[in-house]
Image (cartoon, rainbow, N blue to C red; front, side, top):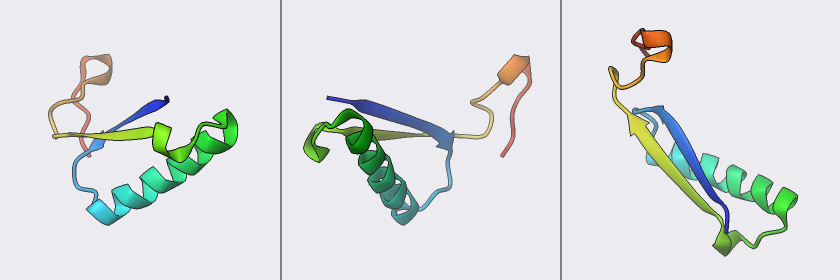
Length: 60
């Protein structure tokens, strides 16, 4: 039962997330042979100011 978490800056539309989730699901199915209903794609929207690579704030 694969769980795929996608962290990205907020601002994507629901339609964009649906398209990404569909493609991610198809790719995971292809490589793991897991059925679609066992694959879970979770989006985590980050606000600007939530991401600090190397201690520096990353902006959009």
